[in-house]
Image (tube, rainbow, N blue to C red; front, top):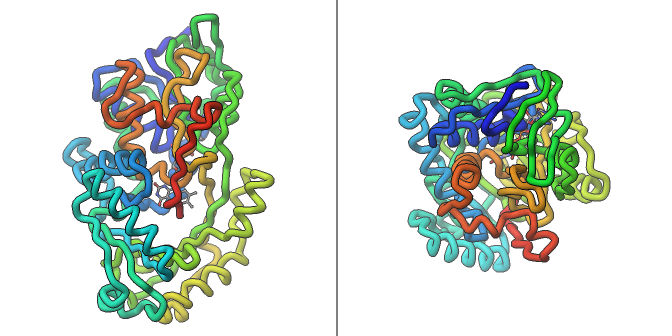
Length: 391
Ligand SMILES: Cc1cc2nc3c(=O)[nH]c(=O)nc-3n(C[C@H](O)[C@H](O)[C@H](O)COP(=O)(O)OP(=O)(O)OC[C@H]3O[C@@H](n4cnc5c(N)ncnc54)[C@H](O)[C@@H]3O)c2cc1C
């Protein structure tokens, strides 16, 4: 039987970041198991790549502060590019209620140490982006160090560095069982044989609940389909623009290559999928018209956006009931660790997650966050902390 100090299930950006942080901390015998023939076929390869610190809860903001600073120095630290582009996130509020929300978030963000986030008036936003229909924009919030990364490159960078420092990646290998005794995990079963280990990390993205079930753990992580529409080249809006969020309906967009990437959470679909979760990742062509209506409403020149519906794609968010991840050792099963349920924020929070999990696995504690806030027990104990800044 093979053996490993730590076995990581899932070679997406989260598993790769944990492998990187473990090996960087000196833990050499790390095995990553990925069921697909290549990395990135889960949520990571479908992501919009947005990174932001403009959240509402202290713990989300803390995770972003670590992660964004990490992405800003990714190339120097790892010797691989992650294509961090600090073009910002601009939230546009269209009611006093939304402005009160942004003001309260802004105060929390400043308190947590985010110095460069700023509130803006409607007139300032209109001056900054005259292409926006701004008659109903009351004001907004902008942070210039928010922006975008290339999730696939970051994942590759993490895994390549980890592989150069002792980690092994088994592709086309599925986890099929987790073996335990009274003291905790003893080994895992895979399609490539058994591996003896005392520590296993669940990094299975939207499929995390299935992996947890193999260990007899009930994990409240549900898949939720999200669709993105890239446009063809389009020059009537600046390509230096930030991620712009229309808070009236949740439509948001950012520059991508010579065009733009459009996103919108269809509330009808969300309601339906919350009732009946599904792993379906088919792109619905009818979505294109729905999103273009929102796009042209906020950015009149987007009425001329060239879009090839065949280029749209869908992927899965991994949702938890309070929209925060579940991190740390599972209660009642020593050696079984969770890094799941990022609720749409797994790329931007991957660096912090890697550091936190590496700390918890190797030393049992971390100073990056109060890890008890995000443990699985919070659901049974009624300690949910709701993140509302979810796109
Ligand atoms: C359309 C869309 C837009 C998004 N936009 C953003 C964004 O702007 N910013 C952001 O931060 N996040 C965004 N996200 C969310 C982000 O992509 C995810 O939170 C993140 O990729 C999760 O990474 P992961 O490594 O946990 O999961 P994944 O990338 O899904 O990786 C999990 C891996 O586990 C493997 N696996 C599963 N079961 C097994 C098994 N039994 N055995 C072996 N391997 C297994 C899978 O094959 C997969 O490769 C977006 C997601 C979508 C769908």
